[in-house]
Amino acid sequence: MSALITTQIAALAKRSTLKTLRQPFQMFPIVFFPVLLLAVNASGLQSATRLPGFPTHSYISFAIAVAFIQGSMFSLINTGTNLAEDIESGFFNRLALTPMRRLALIVGLLLGVAVLGALQSGIYILIGLLFGAHLDAGVAGALVVIVLGSLAATAFGAIGCAAALRTGSGEAVQGMFPLFFVFIFLSSGNLPRNLLKTGWFHTIATWNPISYLIEAFRSLFIVGWDTVALERGFAVAVGLLVVGLGLVVLTLRGRLQRT
Amino acid sequence: MSDLDNGIEVEGLVRVFKGGVRAVDGIDLRVAPGEIYGFLGPNGAGKSTTVLVLTTLLPPTSGSARVAGLDVVHQGPQVRRAIGVSLQESALDPFLTGSEHMRLQSALHGLPKSEREARGKELLARVGLTEAAERKIGTYSGGMKRRLDLALALLHRPRLLFLDEPTTGLDPQSRAALWDEVRRLAQDGVTVFLTTQYLEEADVLADRVGIIDHGKIVAEGTPIELKAEIASQTVEAVPQDPGDRERLASVLHRFGPETAASAGGVAAQLPEGAGDLAEIVRVLDSEGLKVADLRLHSPTLDDVFLAKTGRSLEGAADSADEQDKEASSVEPAVA
Image (cartoon, rainbow over all chains, first blue to last red; front, side, top):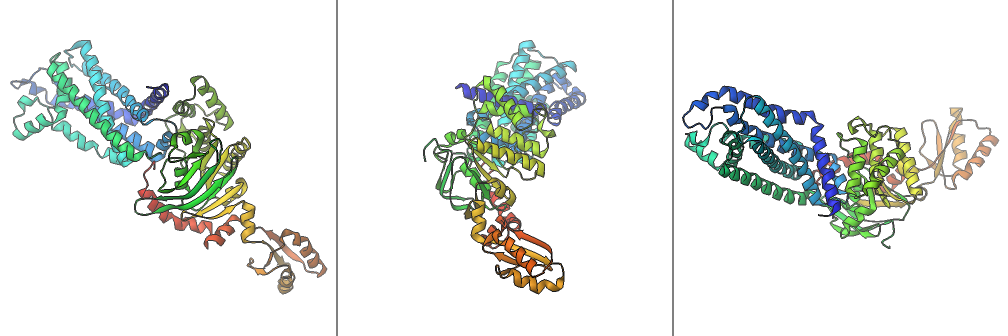
């Protein structure tokens, strides 16, 4: 990779991170809503831990995994909205008028998302531990959670970028949020799959890739080192990232028509 | 035209959008190195689309364009290195400061790290933004944003500068400051391609003007040439005593044919120009005619636009809005 591209990537990643960090209304939901939902679920569903076959006695340790996915989905919205704003305001044209390479634009944007994904994952771990969650895999496990959280945020962020590049509209990107949120509810987010007795729900949760992401995060909190769960979770995150990047490359071709 | 030239050469340029909207419909133009070229026309006339094509952001449907001696279709990256562009919107990030914009832009242009800080400071000082450099753009006025936009366009020392309606929405003071800066740049040898819908701006600033309407260039030349081509100067007088109106008319019409005048006044064209004015005053005096008001009118670029298109530029701006909306609805944001 040439020195110029590295410089361009670093500059764009820094700008992407600063833009999000300087918008409290973007940072607030990333931290507040997943924690709020975690608190509500943990207090209301603690009795679920008494079900035969429930894998832990701490519902908060079980449910905290969902926070990482919710945070990743906020990354989708924030990244997509920020890029759509750049397109709407003409800032994207400003970037296109420089010798900036397409690769630098994509990597720079997503590197910023990755940094924020790691940051928000660290915040969820700290808040979870503060409220009684137990991280069975220890400090090394926390690092893996942060890496997986960053990867998931980047993957969802790429999908948000593709939506922004396709539509050029912040509203259109935000309209995707409920659609993706449904995936969380139709997953093993609230109960382990072995306890989902409704046939159709069990089937959907089994086919829903979000279940495997959640179970990878969860395994580190309540099991320790579950290689199968981690392999599946990382495979889903990488798969989503590949799909997201493919969509970004395709949509960027249509949006960036410069000669 | 050699690769080292700073000029623009366009032949038969066409850009058609989805839905068949011909935003640019076969234009030819030449801009000489070091010239300030004013591209004048109402909203939706095709000015911004032309700029997007010339700055490589939008491929043409047909025709050819060379900017700084480089083909905009086949040498896009080289063209972008040679030009500086300030597009219609002051596209700045409201959450970054002026300095951060300069650093981002200089990194994207690949300026050596040792040079970035100094160049940024130099340009911020040049556009009078040193004190506001560490403030976020969200706190800047329209004029400050435009000045920063200009500084960003100049960061990599371009040979050719595109300014797309740079003073739209600015107060007169900010507008005058920007004009001064454009003049300084031209004196430094930078070629300036300036689009505007302000007649005065084109008249005062441009060495030559191209008038575009419905995607076609309808007139081109220096402002003086264009005005001389379509109309002579006119003289208008208002008699002190309204009863002298007929006598006043007979005097003025000795110098040229009658033309439209304000209420109570009499006007005549002056085919020989302002040189007749002294003689008119002498004749009025010798005939004992007293006037309350005597004015010499020079033709404006709006008169040129009126003569070439059959309507005034301001009226055209309103009627072109619909076409503009149609074009923008099919035009990708970048394209």
